[in-house]
Image 1: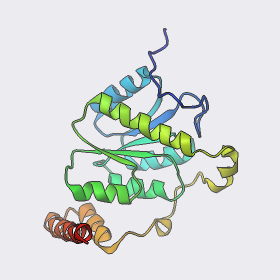
Image 2 (image 1 turned 180 degrees about the horizontal axis):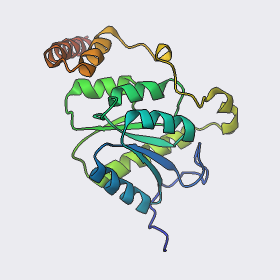
Image 3 (image 1 turned 180 degrees about the vertical axis):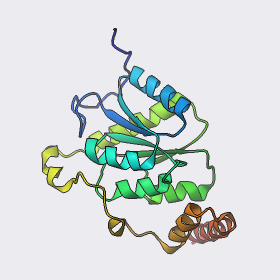
Image 4 (image 1 turned 120 degrees about the horizontal axis):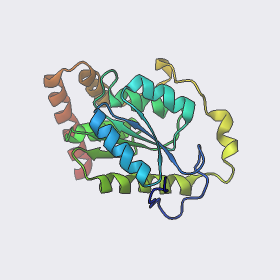
Amino acid sequence: MSEPNSILPDGLAKNSPSSGWPPRLLMVEDDKNLREVLAYNLRREGYRVLTVAYGKEAVQLAYAEQPDLVILDLMLPDLSGFEVCRMFHRQLTMPILMVSTCEEEVDKLLGLELGADDYLIKPFCFRELLARVHTQLRRVEMLRLPDPLTLAPTISNEPPKPSDLPDLPPLLQNYLCCYENSQMAELRTIALLIFSSLRVCYRS
């Protein structure tokens, strides 16, 4: 079988920070058709791709395999992407590209606050996804320490306990709680409060 036509971004060293060359991506997406299509196309571009459909699987696999980047769907069958992102954030350092059909600014804000590095709204063009993956991997390469082995003792193979998860500002904590409990009316109220506080900051 011939090698895929890779267009991996220029400037990436032939050693990815955690898993060798080519970079390895973890895709967390419960839509089977979308997951398979995206994984197929990313592999054609030269990436190695791990795929899972559930949040709990994603957490276990990420801590075990240490991928170079995670493509994380917000709406998953067991855990929300917010929860998964929050569990990654404690000890894992790979970039997280969150994807979602949710267009609300507050969802994007919360995802970024919880540790996502980028947020892409569905439906999207594959080339846009690819460009964002390239950008995040370039950023990691630029920030990488000269000797990655010095970071090894700080990386755990075990997911964090709930008590270890980072705190959020009160409004975002309330929004996350309402989101996970499907309290839509409360979500709208909190979203308005967040937007109001942002407008005050911009005016000042």
